[in-house]
Length: 447
Image 1 (cartoon, one colour):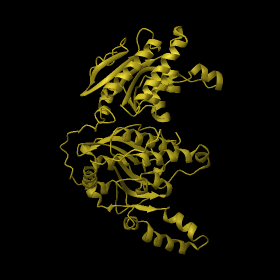
Image 2 (cartoon, rainbow, N blue to C red):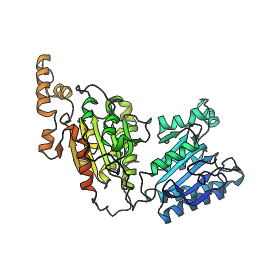
Image 3 (cartoon, rainbow, N blue to C red):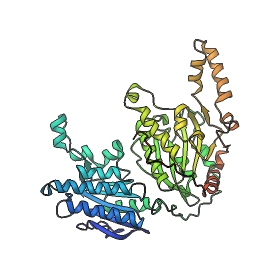
Image 4 (cartoon, helix red, strand yellow):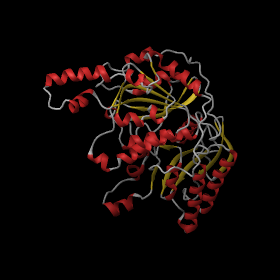
């Protein structure tokens, strides 16, 4: 299949294309597909590994187009060896150069795991990917599913998070890959590219007053706030349909690419659950690997409570997010809009986790819990009219950002209309930031 923007990139029958450009970005590229209906042969595995090795040696992004029906049966164990060779090569690239893949057909069995090793995956609407196919699922579980229902683009966009973006066709997939690469550096040692803009860094944002309800129990779309802050209102949201209670995306502020992580009060009141923790942790590590500053927007009442959530491992997955922020060395700006309660406040890049600048609106509430919950514990058994008085007193004494500011946990309480200028100034100040990495083989946080 030939695309308009990247004609050599997606040409079937050429497993490796070296020295191509996708937009303005030089890349090392590969394409799985062709006469074997995309089955991965031993030769394909070797060529994919060669493309990855070339990306690593040239320090350029690795870009791939995949349509694989699995390992080539006729090649026997050699095909499995080829897949293993390719997987190891991708692992060497991880965190060193960006890995972006487009899936334009099936991606089955072992080769499907390549998608999980990429930084960003774009799937076309007719693509599908899975490890065990419908016949195996039916034989083992009794469930009869179509390939699309089992592993289609919609399933991977909503339920697994494998698909960061979904495209109508291969041509749009190439456009989306180009958009993503426009925010990324060539490699981990390079700075992100400057993105020209006519949007002034000092532009005020008074419209945010109308976007956030006055009652803290009411929801709103945090993406509206983000778009007011970033250049030209452009947010390239990644994995938008997976864990929608957490927003992750790429944008720029004063021409500087940034990664945005934000609680979404519109979904589950912005609580943090297991998928949200995984989504944010993965994105934070991705941005940190490629020198992209982080802007974290906080409005969360806490972790999602429930026995099922705890039994599935909320402790481990919450720790992933905490560890991702604690290890990040890129410039980090935290903005607290409303609620910042308990453990969720901690894992959303609070000052103790090492953020470089913590800003808060006057409406921010930095506390262990909300007023009603706190009074229920502190004044258990009190009459209702006294509880109401105590809630008012608690809000007056604790549900505001000024105590946290007095203690240095918040660097500045700002007028919401000054949000963009304040964040832009903080990022400009933090541009020279350098933080040494610890000398160790690797961490051992839960993955």
